[in-house]
Image (cartoon, rainbow, N blue to C red; front, side, top):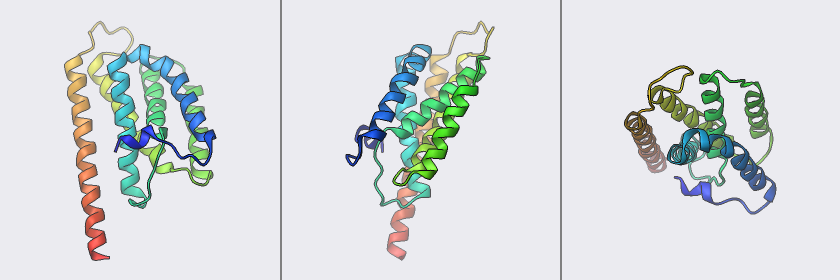
Length: 176
């Protein structure tokens, strides 16, 4: 479920270049703010979340490729973590909105992966925020154990949704 984020459609380099540009720009902000292991967890879980959402809301036999789910997860995390820290979020909100519009309008783009990555990235950001004391003025040291436990819960939920989605597809195939 995560390996699709490491490959891309070869029909046109534009989408790949935009994903890599977004990863570089947003990653340069998020990775220092989160630390490397939280950043990797956000990226991987968002990528998996995009695939899981696509499994549930689109044709499960239609393959999806690209890092877009992970990139959208980073968009959501940047928005929420900036908001929690009291920062200005208008520009990232516009970026997310424009990208979602293009997701729905451009043919051949798996909007399901984008929405799934966005939702998963938001959940991961909430885990970091609740378990990490990210609000301004809080003296509490981020709880690595609480964050890791929250991420395990998110990963387990994604795994369960994947198993249930695969079972649903199997049953539908047997009945249809």
